[in-house]
Length: 124
Figure 1 (cartoon, rainbow, N blue to C red):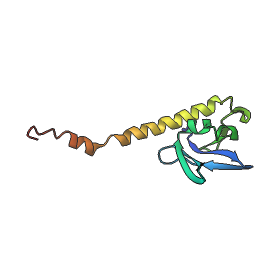
Figure 2: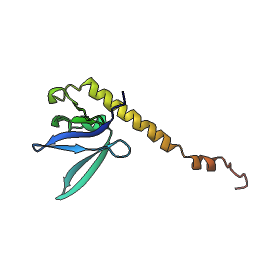
Figure 3: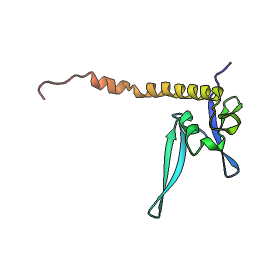
Figure 4: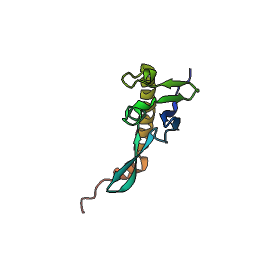
């Protein structure tokens, strides 16, 4: 059976369901607006799947995972944020581990390690 990955996370907002796809790092962008002294600023946070669905702005809005095989699973049983389903938690953990492995591969820079092997000249 092929691995099921998260294609999107959807949540209710003003009687409609919004859907977000992960970026190339597997993170979901949460956009917030903050007003200070009459000025409104648009702020964004890039969160991993588990932190995204636990965020105070999302957890009460019935988040649903859409998987690569088309299957949809509610994150919280009956939309109640006090109980997260184990299957949803496991899928989000796998998603994060998959992208954590890709991050480690990108962090190892073969060119940078080549220049680090040059050594230090004692005359300087």
